[in-house]
Length: 250
Ligand code: PGA
Image (cartoon, rainbow, N blue to C red; front, top):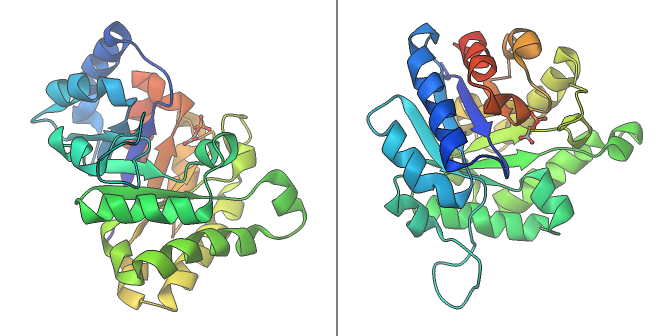
């Protein structure tokens, strides 16, 4: 049995004051949430604040990226061990915004995934196709290429300590969610592709859906066989909305 996971991706949002009220409201509402695991992936600078507020609660925390290097002359980068110093559980890697706005290649994403695994951080590996790629019928080929780069570099067994998030790029922040059927089809493809290499990894790994998930559509997505929770952007900035999504997963 896979325990569902709902992870918030705050992106470049928040302030000390806003984070405090968001997390206070989130912690206050947790009684309503069933068995789902919950996490928030926040901007680097707020990790100490979030760690302090969430310590001892059932909400885990993490970063939205991680350096491929361990330490040294890499201006602006933050390493996996630094994140572990602040008890981060997760690091998102290969988010489509990093791939498209900052030019991260499949190879770089694989190195970041490896750096996270090496230090005991759980990578949330994002994969997903652009609208043109879906229209051209290449969704599965794109997702396979993104996964393959990581499997070839890190080995299939490393996925035992990882989470995958399928995020169709055309659904991110656009209000256009994939239909439950469209999402389930890709999730089943991902699980099937992993199963060719390891049945155990495929049956145990959590595959989250991301892209305009909100309280109103979460339940119909999470009820799909191969959808094990969500990676939530915009809706994770509102405690009530995020709690409802967590309830739908639990
Ligand atoms: P969204 O973002 O929920 O705002 O569409 C999801 C994500 O980018 O992780």
